[in-house]
Image 1 (cartoon, helix red, strand yellow):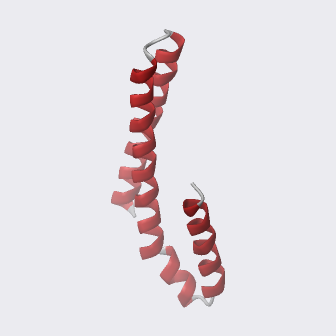
Image 2: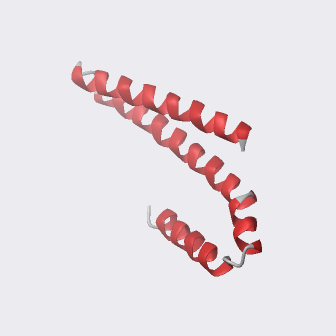
Length: 88
């Protein structure tokens, strides 16, 4: 997960910076459409972050849990995640 962790941390820094920029834009009463464009960029960055984390989970944690006899537990967690995503 080393490369994935580095990518995740880099993306989190990007998101944090973007959020600070949005806060500044709001504080300075910038044009609403410009602020909304930035919030859209943050939302897309978060979705990409989630995809990276989920993919890593599916390749590492899930097989390990199944091997260790925790298949039902990990399947329940994945169903919960799916339900969260489907209810967006």
